[in-house]
Each structure stands twice: as structure tokens, then as C-alpha cells.
Image 1 (cartoon, one colour):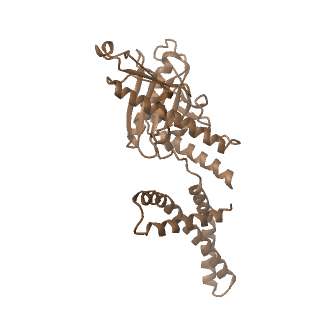
Image 2 (cartoon, helix red, strand yellow; image 1 turned 180 degrees about the horizontal axis):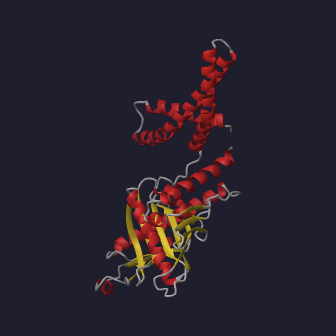
Amino acid sequence: MSLDDSLNRVLARVDELGAILAQPDLAPERMADLSREYAELEPVAERIRTLKSARSELVDLEQMMADGGDPEMRALAEEEWHDLKHRLPDLEREVQRLLLPKDEADERSAILEVRAGTGGDEAALFAADLFAMYQKYAALHGWRFETMELAETPLGGAKEAVASITGRGVFARLKFESGVHRVQRVPETETQGRIHTSAATVAVLPEAEEVDVQIDDKDLRIDVFRASGAGGQHVNKTESAVRITHLPSGIVVSQQDEKSQHKNKAKAMKILRARLYEEERRAREAARADSRKSQVGSGDRSERIRTYNFPQGRVTDHRINLTLYKIEKVLNGEALDEVIDALIAEDEAARLAEIT
């Protein structure tokens, strides 16, 4: 399908939606669905109309230039023609970008999982730094950040940390963070000043609702046990911790942060749904784009995506060869948008190249 065909289809659909929504006897549920679609498409239609108007104006200016007549008017038309000719490609690219298929999970909240990788205590400390970075980043965006699981080390590191980040468009901003993050720095325990390299793994999963993933009770094995770690006498008396095993997939989720077994089970189910939904989503995407691996990475947890080099004060994202010499601002969440914006732009450019 040509670009013009796509543009005309969007305009026709917006007109159709407008006519349907004007009907007085529309069912409330259908009204809600169609209103949501209209709200998504109308801004796109507006840019399409702007593009079509610009193209039409270009033709009119060319006609004025060809007709001769008043030299002053012809010179003015030529000046406007050059200006419009220069702006037209940008308008076309913007419309093409708006027409790109949306990831259905983009508007969702997300589950963040950070785990220490190779590097012992230093890897756990780095994992804690990353977890704190995303917490600060969430605060800057006005998102709700709720720690669901935190397995701390004696030095203040994190073997594993899981959080729910709630807000509109969280997954769209964070989905390219999945992968292996590497740190190069001198650990506090290092007496000879040698630089160590360690790593942590990040996974960002779109949050799933019960309607997204059907989980049969017979497919679950639920074990309860006493919580370990901090918690005073409570941990010795109550079997409040919960481990859920999803038998068909082999996915295991444990929760013990809450004193209530019921709350721990609810949190574990939330994480399980997110992991199952992500597996289904990735399988669908792989089927749709089997021949392509995104230029900004596959989201594979084993893929090394970024290095944080403290001696040089730099952060390098290896997928797009972007280096920022502002490591503290990145880890404070302030400059993380610079990396994320570049990743999103690269992904859009790669997808545009496929359809043009």
C-alpha cells in the first residue's frame, strides 16, 4: 500500500468514526471504544490534512511561477515555493512516523526487575544503584514506584529487586532498558585502586491484567513458607511467604515482603501475569518480524546494552553508539531521557526504513 493510500484510509476512518459517534442511540461500551480510537486517530488526521494542504499549496505556487505575470508576485511565489519544498520532507516523515504500528503495550504500566550479575558484592551494589536510578526517574515523570521485592546484601547491595511502576506510557519509555548493564569502577573494598567490571540484568515487562492472560488454577503450584531476612519475630511465626510455580511454562515467582500471605500471593500473581504476557507478546512480535532484529536490540536479557564507566564519567549505549559524559546525571535519572529519546528515535528510524 502506498503512503497516499494509507493517508486516505486514516482520513476515511476518522470521518466514519465521527459519523458513528454522532448517532444518538450508540451503546455506552461501543461509544467508549470508538471514542478512544477517534482520540488516537484525530491528531494523526490533522497532520495528514496539513501535509495534503502543503502539497496542494506547492502545486498552486508552481502554477503561479509558470504563468508569468507580475514579476514581483512571481518572485514572492518562488520564495514561498522554496520554503515549502524545504519543509515538505519533514512533514512527510512526521506523518509516516505517526502511521507506524503502535506497540499495544506502550501505554501500560510496567514491572521492573533488576538482578545482580557477575561481580559479587560489587554487582549487587551496582544493581542497587540501577534500581535507585529508575526510582528517581519514575519520580521525575510523576509515576508511582512501588517496591515489590528487595533481597539486600549486608553491604547495601541488591541481589534482586522488583518494582511496579504505574503511570501512562511507562512501558514505552522503559522497554529498551531490558538487557545487561555493565559497570566499570573502583569498588570501595578495593585497596589497590584497581578498576573492576561487574554487571546487572534489567528486565522491563508490561503490566498485564487478568483479561490479558488466562491462568488456570490447575496450572499453578502454590507453596507457602516462612519469610527469611529482616522482620523480627514475625518471620519465625507465620508462613506468609508465597512461591507460585506456573507448571506449563516453568516460571517461578516468590514474594515475602508483605506480612500477609494474601498480599504476597496477589503480588506474585501480578508478576507472573506480566512475565506470561511478555512471553506471548514477544512470540507475536517474533512471528510478525521474523526476518528483522531491531537496531536498538532485541530486549534479550543476555544482551549487553550499556556500560557505566566511572573513571571516565561516561555512559555508553552500545546499541546506538551513544556516549554521554554525565554519569551522575544519568544515575540520578536526570539525563536518562537523553538515552531513551535516542533509542526511541533509532527504533522509529529503523521501522520507517522498512516501510519506505
